[in-house]
Length: 287
Image (cartoon, rainbow, N blue to C red; front, side, top):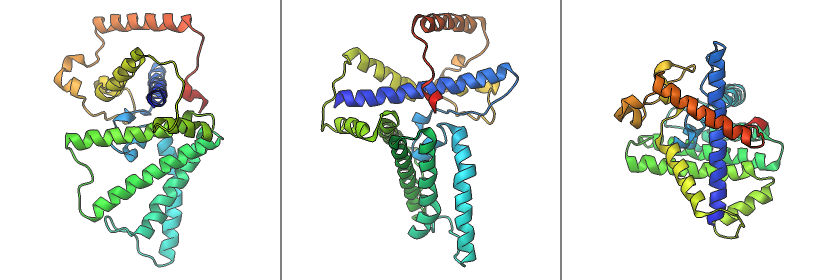
């Protein structure tokens, strides 16, 4: 049980930091050539629902899928409904059939295509369909609340933390399919996560401490765009102010000699580690 969860969580964090670093390096390399690239990664594990998650994870892909797949499907269906004399849905007044046709169907189809884009295996198809299901549930819940005049979100800390944790758990489950070699392999891991089977691993207690520290870093620390907000390093970047930078403004990044030396030392050790092990490529590079 614990080893299954540990494996799922560590891979989720591995691809998180891999893709985060990949995206930040792209922005930095673009600046070296005088180009400002758009933000592609914005602390997705701080998202409070799956709609928010996909507005933070691989943001350029999300915009592409929305513009060239989701929106054309919705427009085609809407025009067909208008030609048939059916009224357009009003905010907070959408019927179940309209929701299925205009929201659920385009969303699931778009995420199905997203899954195939990541790979040709059935595990990627399940990954895409699972996220499509997540998004339909999230949109349906928001439509249900809007229909009853309820606020869509809440600023209460308990609600927000619970929403972030639930969203993260949904992402972890989907990542099992994303990582597995096949659907049966993913199901075997998931069965271990619910205590139905045992997995043989070699994790020790220090690994669990490392995992806890990484999760705390992901959820509590500002991201690179927040650290460098006043320098406007990326297009359309509007990072929210971090609690750390709000309470301790001196921690904001600035080109001072002290920070320059610190970055130089970190860079030296990073290169030393990189040259001491076998070369590896970014996990997300294969997608």
